[in-house]
View 1: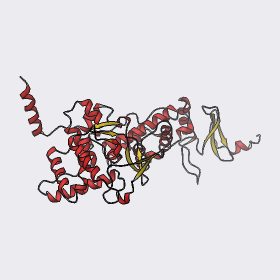
View 2 (view 1 turned 90 degrees about the vertical axis):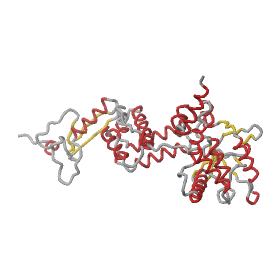
View 3 (view 1 turned 45 degrees about the vertical axis):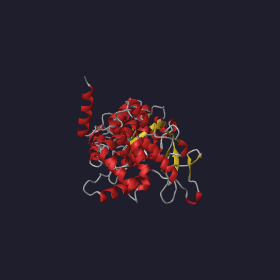
View 4 (view 1 turned 30 degrees about the horizontal axis):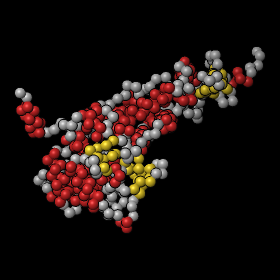
Length: 411
C-alpha cells in the first residue's frame, strides 16, 4: 500500500469534504474558503465539520463549519456586507448617529435623548449582539423587559432610534431585513400632562404675589402661565426681546445648561422662532420685573452661544446671585412656591407640577383662540401637536357654562 500523505494522515477519518472545504492539519480545524461580495478571499473555520461532531478535548465549543457556511451563504445570497453584519447593535447606532450628526444640526436636547437610549441599551444583551444575528424574537424579549421599567412614550423614543439604526444598516447592506420593523409599543400608558384648573391657578398666583418668600417668583410664574413659553425660552429672554410699545414678546433663543455652563441656543424647532402677544397681565408683570431688576455689583451677567456670540440683558436672574438662570432654577423656585402654598392651604392643596404644565395650562385656557393662532403662539409645526398633546378638555362645570352660553346665541 502506498504511503499516505501528511495531510491524509492528520485528516479525521470518514469526513467527506465539499467543494471549497479543507482540513488544516496545523490548526486541526476545518476551513471553508470563499470570496466576499467585494471579491476578497476569506476563510472561516471550526474544529467541527458537522454540528453532531464532538469538540476536541480542551477546545471551546462553537458553531460547526457547516453551520457557519449556511449562515455565510445566506449573507452572500443577499449581497450582505459580512463585516457590517458582525457589528453589534450599539456599534451600528453609533455609526448611524455619526452619520446623522454630519447631516443635521441637531438640538442639544435631541442628542441628550439619543444618549439616554444608548446608555439604556448598554444594560441589555441585545445591545451587544451582532446585528446579523438579531431576530424579531430577540427584539420582542427586549421590549418585554423594557415594559417592566419604562413607560410607553420613553420606550417608543428608544424603539424609534433603534429602528432607524437598523434601516441604516439595511441601506448599507449589513443586514437583509430589519428585525425591529414590527416592534412597537402602546403609548397610552404614558402619564398624560394635565392642565391646572383656572381657579387653582389663580389662587396659586395670588398667593405667590403676596407671600414674602414667594413674591420674587410671581412675575416669572405669571408669565409662564399666560404666555405658553417653555421654561428655557423664558430664561433666554433678554430686554431687547420685549417690545413694550406694541406688547409683543420675540422668542428667538433659549438658555440651557450644558456641561455646567449656561449656553444660548436656538429654540427647540424652527417654528419656535415666533412672536407672542402680551396680555395686559403679562405686560404689567414685565414692567414690574424690569423695574425690580438689579445687578449685584453692577455686573451684567453674560452668556455665549455655540459660535461664541455674546448675550446680555437677561430679564430674569437668580434671586441672590443675580446670575442667569436655566430650567432647573425655575423648577426649584416653582416647587418651593408649591410647598409654601400647600403649607398655607392644607385643606385645598395644589398638586405638584413642573414648569411645562404652565404651558399646557395656557394652551387649555386659550383654546377659544383661532387654532392657527394658538399653534403659532405655542410654536408648533403641526396643529395636531397642539390639540392632541397640549389642549385638555375643560372641567365639566366649565363646559356646562360654555355650552349654555353658546346655546343662548342660537335662535
